[in-house]
Structures are given as structure tokens and as C-alpha cells.
Amino acid sequence: MHRFRLAVALALTAVAACSPQDMALDLSQRTAATVVYPVVNQYLPGPEARLATDCIVGAATQGQLEALMRDVGTRAGTDTVRNVQAIAASPDAQSCLAAQGLPGLPA
Image 1 (cartoon, helix red, strand yellow):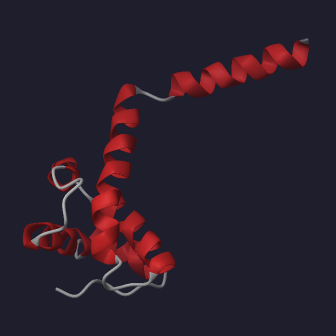
Image 2 (cartoon, rainbow, N blue to C red; image 1 turned 30 degrees about the vertical axis):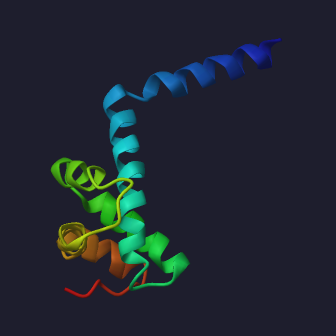
Image 3 (cartoon, one colour; image 1 turned 90 degrees about the vertical axis):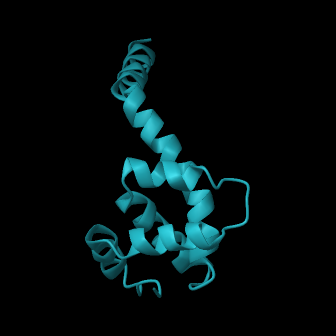
């Protein structure tokens, strides 16, 4: 019984630690990734595209995430590709890509 209470307490603590802002950011990033991945996958194969997508989405500002989310469910047009390339060229994304041993995206 003691283990069960401890497990419940730990689970509740973990859930409570997730702020609404953190949950919203996570949702924004996961949604933006559905837009970024197809663009990145044009330049890199599947597994590398996944890693690069994580780097790009992780480096995006809230405004950039919002811009990417507006393109959910549509084929990536020129503006979307440019947005992804701009984020990929940022110092944070470049650092992440280099740490993963991945090339940058072409401009």
C-alpha cells in the first residue's frame, strides 16, 4: 500500500510540474514539427530529417512557431520553406545541427 501511495504522489507531482505554458509550448512545437519535417525531408533522409526538425523547432521563437502552425494541413509553399530555412540558419539551430553531425539547409 505504501508503494502505491508513493507512486500516486510521484505521478501527481510530475503532472503538477507541467505548467500550462510548458504544455502549450510542447503542443506548439509538436504541431510546428508537422510542417517543418516535410520541408527538411526534401534535403535530408528520414532519420536525419527527424533530428534536424527537432533542432529547427527547438530553435524557433514563439512567433516563428505560430507562423509555422498556420501552415498545418497545407503543402509547404515558398514562405513556409523560407521560414524553415531562416530558423535553420539561426545560431541555436546551427549549433544543434552541428552537435548532431547534420548539415545546414540550403538557403
